[in-house]
Length: 190
Image 1: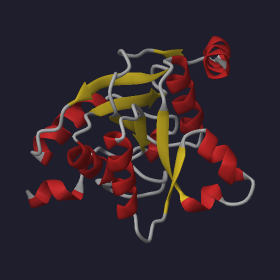
Image 2: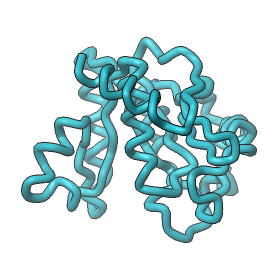
Image 3: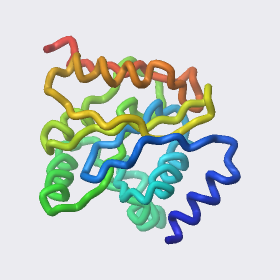
């Protein structure tokens, strides 16, 4: 109840507009892109809470140290050890098999730094768990944020990513100069 009220208050005072397709009714990998600012986290919570979605998100384990740990966990955080990120996939698979319905928020364009490709973890998790991919966005150009379509991945990385690229083609993020084109290194390997 508190989360929905907080989200209503956020959207009522925000200069941004929530525009969204219906929330998925089964576990989904929820892409948060373009990830260009720390404000993306606030928008993600605002979207999820307004839509009454149960979300989990991946964050570097240093975010979970000291007093921040319980807060980040309460907000849906799952700590990731960058030295062995594969353990996260096993944890997500276990949650899905246990029947938990949630959106796993992943920012595949990483940590807002300069790089040329998206990280492919979201794709691997979706394929291994059978979860679809829901395209979440923040777009400064239109001052809108929300959820786009939910896609079933085919396993053809280039084809799947063409659909992702088409959706994000006109999305700028909060800091457009930090936007990374939705492209996986693995596309060239197929």
